[in-house]
Length: 467
Ligand code: ASP
Ligand code: MG
Image 1 (cartoon, rainbow, N blue to C red):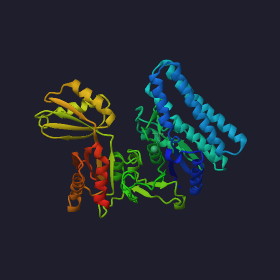
Image 2: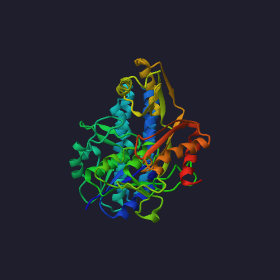
Image 3: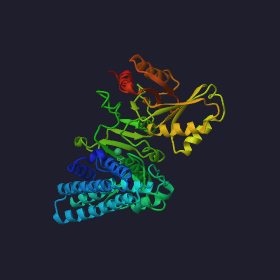
Image 4: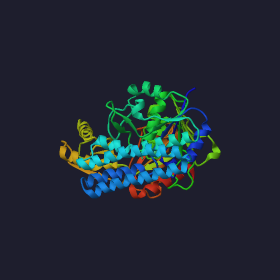
């Protein structure tokens, strides 16, 4: 029988009592599973804070004390969770001891960076993985204490090998598939910490923020899973962010491309690269809501290969402020060969990823992640590109995108979609900086003034889904 890979994220793990809901879900499946878990809510951010504090105060007693304090806080938190969830005293003690050993390893890394006064990237990745390493150990022990056959499996032990890029790695499927599949055989519930894999030397490399989704997808791909079930605390993918639009609709089905574009353009529900490994094997992703036990194992959203153009074409409107525009000005930049090649080369050498490029005769617009803007600006200023008379930057923008299969179809409905979105935004007074359609078959987007992001999202959502 094929296994199901089940992922629980930080939103499922906020309070000590939340573990109960997770155990209930595992019992409801009543079959062999691979669980992939994130850190408890907020832990990764706190670890990032710890590393940052260590960097800034490198070597000082105050900074060392601060990170010691943090591991003490973690110890107390874990103790509280163990006490709330494991009844048997001896089992409790064993679990606390095992967690303590793991926290000692974390302590050693933190002390190390104080001693050398620097945080090498491989140490950074190792430290940040501890949130997940604590979750997997804890959950395994709680499952065992409830009489459920379970074991923990760490990425380094099962051979989840990556391309070795610290902070933002990808799974190396050629190197991983056979060993991961073999290591995850068996009928017990197997618990894997998400967020990281290891390079060929065994060093921890992270899959990027929110990367546990990608871990789970990679594992599902390696073992040829029946499905990847992602548990959330919301009703699946929605037609818009519920914080901005009052009554967004839940979306029952999306194809892989739509889900990828929605995540790319700001929907926070899945890591943007989650669908990548599943695409080829046609493994469905099912999004379920842990706060709705009445629904059992019935998902809110299923993501698969089916391409359905719905009557209204647009399935969701999304937005993100993680974007900035770098603009190269020059009377003939659109016409001059080779400029773009130099630009992309320079940015690539500086490790900067380009989100999109839109050119005209007198300007080249490069869209970037916001925290890459200053480095990109400095690199291009320094490079002096022939034909470019000025470089400017703008980070007061946001992207608003409409996503749905058929958005760009040459039919009347399809081609009208992008212009309807644009007109709706402009009619409600939104300052639109740029608009683009055609880069993806299922998405069209516009850049608006950052202050107008909410207004734009509401206007465009109302246009397709009613006020
Ligand atoms: N804990 C990691 C993060 O906060 C990974 C994850 O949650 O998926 O980014
Ligand atoms: Mg997450």
